[in-house]
Amino acid sequence: MKVFRKGRYRVRFAQSDADIVAAQRLRFRTFRGEQAGVDADDFDKTCIHVLIEEERSDTLVCCYRLMPFETGTQIGNSYSAQYYELDALAAFPGPMVEMGRFCIDPDHRDPDILRIAWGAMVRYVDDHNVELLFGCSSFHGVEAEAYMDAFDLLRERHLAPKRWLPRVKAPSVFRFGQRLHRPDLKKAMKAMPPLLRTYLLMGGWVSDHAVVDKDMNTLHVFTGLEIKGIPPVRQKLLRASSL
Image (tube, rainbow, N blue to C red):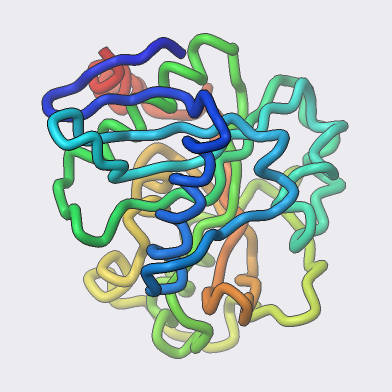
């Protein structure tokens, strides 16, 4: 992906170790709530890092990383495979990409940032004929009770197709459907992380459980999006944001 500009922002791939460290620092500040430190792991070495910067100030305001796979047979090497049993998705025949470590600088609340981030993703998907986008979508904190309406809505409307459904692998999980309760839609959507909300609007689906990640202080769900399943109107809007 070449550098492209949208309004006041610039989107590009990381080109140097310094670029990657800048992303790791933003991730640490966003995920840990502390100013000094880096969020890094071994997956960083094999990922493509996408940076969104405010052009006037050269400030990094958003980043995420991409790990491409030629087919599902390689999905066991993904970050998500540490937490979910993904044997079913090993049968997925087409190119796929894992999007991870998505974060927006908490000091920058411009909704255009999320739209531009998805526009950049659309460019990558189109350029590489990606057929499945997947990753982990995180809820802040590890108390499932705070997200019961959201989890009930996910179970009721957005579970993965049975042929792709991830199975439990992590030692600590919250299984959906532990209460017989109709979700409050307003509360459910308010509790959904913005990234997950966007996935769902495009026809994305999730695992039937959330992983309890005490290290990151999150509950996260496996999220998948089959590109061919995105409604045509949504595809049109996404491609418009990628220009």
